[in-house]
Length: 468
Image (cartoon, rainbow, N blue to C red; front, side, top):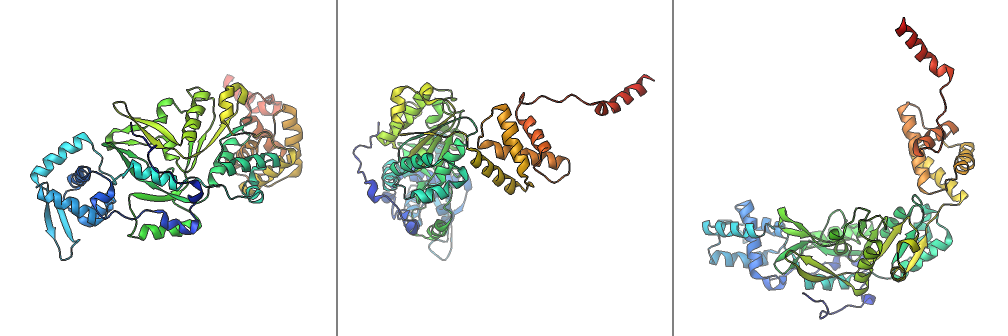
């Protein structure tokens, strides 16, 4: 089993990367095969498989496809030509205006390599290089002060005490458990916390573990930098002085829901592409991992929480490849759990102690609920009416006993828009529109009125004509 204990550790105090230095976080390019850290045979096979799939290929095209500089590829190709695996198919006037192709024997050997492993994507980095980069980019202390946090989460309409707990947990980087009734806004809040992460990081396209490739970069998770960092990202992408095996991105947010099973927390074999897909905790490195609906998964809540919190505390997680081969990967992430169940009924005492902050996210106060409803009406273009809103709060909510949850305004306003659109009318906040939306949302919360004589008259006339 590979161990990370012997590798150097960089203190978090030196890890914070200033936004203005975003372009400099990418490592310099390797100048030789040795600089890549990869075995020569692996690079040779990777180049051969690329030529096998594409046929005759320009050297700059190979550079783009494999994310390796020309100096490294030329070294590998010179060896392949000497070993009669590849040959020069065409040569232009410049040193890089050259095309390579496999020899007949090279095609046969490349076919065998393809059968063993079909991976022919960007060249990976070593596990050691990845671990060093993760430590270098380890999560900085949150620089948001109480005022800034309040502004950033203003649309959540949280109580001051909740904001204080969120700020303290983010400052310390400690695990959070958001708990409260379904619809109180826990999931939205967790994702908002992810968006508050500061700085940019660099992620490898893939890792080489033994002879296997693990794909780390996920375009759905590792998003391009935005705002001031977007310009630095473009500068970095245009520079030749960086290692193209790494990608500059925002700090990731990985969200898991009730569909999670134990096997999904390990590497997933991607047989068609000849590699493994990274586990969630690997994708979440230097970012935030959210476990939503804790207690609804097909594994015990305590087991799931302990697995992630232990990896976070040890700063490494154990992963496995086919055949039972285990290795340790770096694990530097923040954790947020969200549940609609009572924490003391969901987790045992030991598991609860692993959670740094237990943060209640409950119903809104009446003033906050009204403010949120007005915001939703404005955003959806619904003509607002204060009397109708009083009816919603004083009659519908109070009469049914349903709490003023953050999820309701968006859902109610959305249904008002739906009904109005269907009827070809402008959406308006009226008592009738609220009754219609409310009835469609809550089965059994309101009785369906019996049809009046005027409603039944057309049906009676049709029946009479049919009898005649």
